[in-house]
Image (cartoon, rainbow, N blue to C red; front, side, top):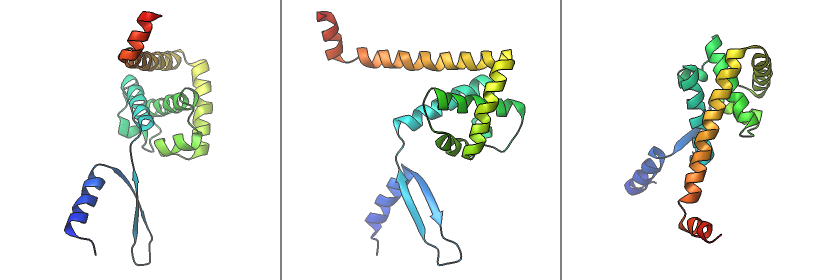
Length: 158
C-alpha cells in the first residue's frame, strides 16, 4: 500500500518528468512507466527544430502531423537532414522525433538531396538556417569556454 507521502513524491516526480506509458489491453490494466529525464541533446534537438520551423514559418506541431503540404514536408526534410548530417543522429531516432518510421526518414533524406540540388530557394533556406544554428552554438561554446576563470587565466599566461 502506498502512503500519502509516497504518492505525493511520485506525483512530484511525474509532474517534473516526461512519462512514457504502456498499457496492456484485454487483461487487468497494468500501467508501466519509465521516467525519462530531458537531456542536453534533446533540448538542443528541440531548439534546432524550432529554428527550422521559424525560418520556414511552419508551426512546430504541424511538423509531426501527417500533413503532406509542401511547406511542411520541406521543413521536415530540412530538419531530418540537419539532424542526420550535422548532429549524427540515426534515422530510427529521427523517425521517433518526427513520428515517422525509419524508411520514411530515409526517403525524406533522399528527397532533401533532390530538392537541395534543384531548388535555389530551398537551398538558400536550408543554408541560412544551418549557418544561423552553427553561429549560435559556436557563440555559446565560446562564451562557455571564456567564462571559466581558469581558462581566462591560462589564456593570459600563454
